[in-house]
Image (cartoon, rainbow, N blue to C red; front, side):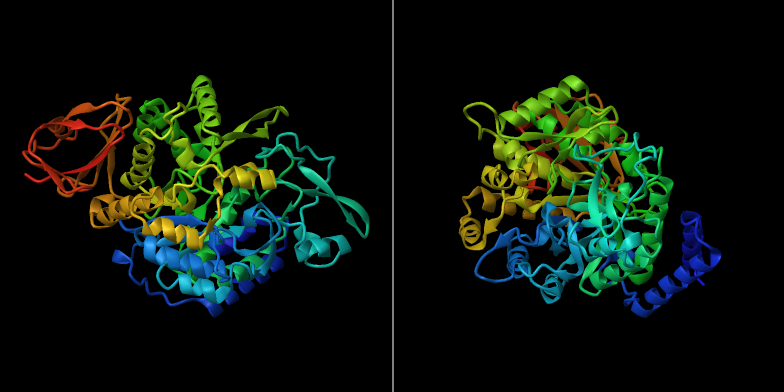
Length: 580
């Protein structure tokens, strides 16, 4: 027996303290049996040195129906566009929830066995997986109110009667952390009258009772279906909320962490080169707690980055970015951060509590509203509403609020995306962002959902016209980012776990990062202002304990510099290598 499988048993004992030894033994044996019957080939394929990632790794985040038309399944159309226009940005493709669902962009899953027909089927997903590793969501915290388990709960039938979380309202739930300002409980009509059910994210998303250990078997079977259809990266959505105890905040509890460990063991025994991603939009200390042990997630979202980056580009002041770089965490091997600017959700604000002061935060919210954005709120423990996220398209956020709104818009956009490539970790790109999507006010008015302002759907015929024209913002964006990512992939200095040092500690106008070791090192320079700035390149050597160089090369544009002082243009990015 492997140490991992013995650890699995130990974790089950620690999590499910109220279950008998015989129950735990039976559950453990069943999990092992399922794993042994479904283990995939253990070869690591194209991965270098058996690593789970390298300098070419990049995640493209997209809805399964982000691009549609021609009366074809949207997954088929999406695959074609990605293969031909986004190849360097999509070694990993995160297909947002594609199972049958009833709301919340797929996150209210109503059937764990079937892909929504408008997206396609498992064959279409497999076709995408021929040229890309697929990342898929495991929505553990809740299911749709239309899921069969809910109907079974209403009738008092197994397994749903014990899978739905229906606690006593007399228990102490006053400390519960709320990501929404909707009611924590809703009432369902059952054969035994009305019963309260837990609804963390709203009435159509009913929380599961993870104190029933047999949920593990149900979700392991879904994971197996995933990996048999090209999925190797698994994203645990809102995983911090899955375990509830009266008198606590009901977020990041010890049992939630142990369940992440359980899923890590299960997934790694099925697919050794798999990657486990946790999504916890919370202060950074709590977010990183899923990485620190090295036994839970492989990667977490770098949630402070988007709001700090946005604030820096709007104000021309990057001191908070430099502060973030100075406290960049040292992490165990094969753990990292997912560096992104925009996603299908809003720009979360929880992660910058204690980093950005209230005055700067208020000014950021005002600036985003001036650019057509909106602010979503949550209820805190005192029952008061507080800003939770900014809802705005990243392209619209990069504009100016004055009459000349497009001034430097693309320059800011390019800086923001290439900065994610410069940082230690894995870069991620949201399809709507890299296609320069503007605020989708039509979708917002149609649904009333603020997040839909950043979830534009594209008609494939219209999109192809844009992408075939090199002068459109969509085409220019993809050309620029594909080129930068191609250069990144050829430089070991940009490996997700390669060393990183901040060389701009006391600066509020430049972000300067050294990546890699002495002989393969690249120095990335980012001007966060609308002014030209003079920079002495040899000063970078001194601050980084390197010998001075006579010739530097900006590998992003293949230009050599023989002068020691150069002029950094507004919002420009340089990747410098020492040649001599």
